[in-house]
Amino acid sequence: MASASPFDDVEFPSLSSLPFRAGDPPGAIWGFYEFLATSGSQSEWVSPDELGALNLLTPARILRATREEIRIGRVVSLNWAMHNPFPAGWQRRPFEHHVLKWPGRHIFDDEISMNTQCGSQWDSLRHWAFYKTEALVNDQGQSIPLSVDKPLRNGIHTFQAKIVGRGVLLDYFSYAQSQGVDYAPNEQHLITAAELDACAQAQGVAFRQGDILLVRMGYVDWYERATPEVRKNTVSGPTKAVGIKQTQDEVEWLWNHHFAAVACDAPAFEARPCIQEWNLHDYLLALWGTPMGELFDLEALAKTCKETGRYSFFFTSSPMNIVNGVASPPKYVLGI
Image 1 (tube, helix red, strand yellow):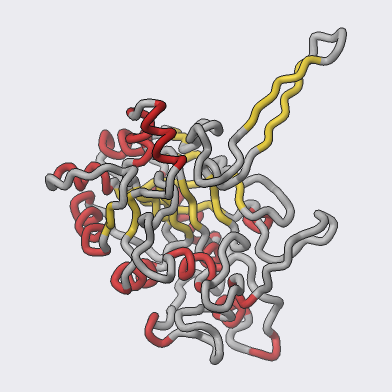
Image 2 (cartoon, rainbow, N blue to C red):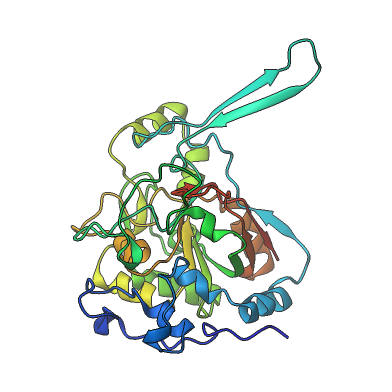
């Protein structure tokens, strides 16, 4: 039997009632997970939480996912080749790989360097600060780590052994095509909350609190089919991409489903260019502490889900253990 957790069945406040703590930015859930962890006793509040929505991946939810989601023993990887996209674009240093041979020996090493935002990645809670206050989640400052000997709060290292649970795919790209909606994934296309609901209904998906949401938007499919020239022109200019629309409807939709993490196959999860002064990143990362994944390769998963008629699965991911890291390649596999 799984051990009980204060995060097993959380009664969240409504979005309109936030912030949870007086004086915090509107929409902020800062202090809420600490409140739950101490049964509401402020005198016993622990240090600021570093997991945010990952707290929802409790032993009970993990155990249920292992029992219900692994049925045919198939494993699917979502790891896009680390050199993709090439060129890196978006003003970021590209992935570099060098193979070295030891002098006089038949021994080989290799060295890699990259900007962790240039390919498949999880964003840690250090990646994005709230646009009005420039504060990270839980009102943490933006100090830049000077040494791995002094771990700072909210680094990617805090995600170790935490991203495990039930994953759900919304194959929006296929759904849109079935509805006659034709769009270029490398151009701005706004996905609405109503469309996400319709896609889920068409797939027979019923969400649960603490799900890990993956949305296939078609960006990787576009990239793999595009010519090198088109790829270069796309990533060299201002970021344009399909993504979730930035209105209050989409903010409410994301909040009301209480996902443990969200991810997609596009560069930003939300549409680019943004249509507001704020971004969904402000809500997900800075105000709610919900990890975001981008540029996941969801092609094989989409094919498997279509073949099996099931769009939920056992999901596990182990980001690199980079102390004070801002982001990391996700290193994930799924069991179906």
